[in-house]
Length: 177
Image (tube, rainbow, N blue to C red; front, side):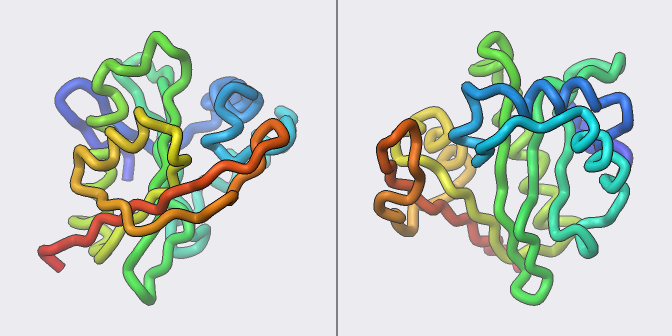
């Protein structure tokens, strides 16, 4: 898979020159809560990760794609399929958009739409799920826009700045499966 194109963005496989972008995202403490990150990453570790990014989803059980807007290659965010389970035809979905200036621009919506289409049409997945903090209004709105339904709440699931927060699980079933 090289790129998956939408009307204003495309999602693509990670490239070696994404090192600085991924380094910046992984070390942005303002998004650690949603990315489930606890410690900073070195450039060395990110470089090792990128060197193994060629593994397909069946081997790595994860697919991380860069979200781009124009052809000169810089990424604006990342969209992921994780915990890929081919036996049960399901995977988790995650997204992060770097920088407030890139949020609320329909970038995330289009990236999620492209990822859902890819997961259902190319990977033949039966279901997708997303774990979202119950106070993350923007992410809840994004996922419910595409038909994800809240199926439960994990109480006191994440510890953030000394306080426990609830996390909801949202699920999207592929009715064409």
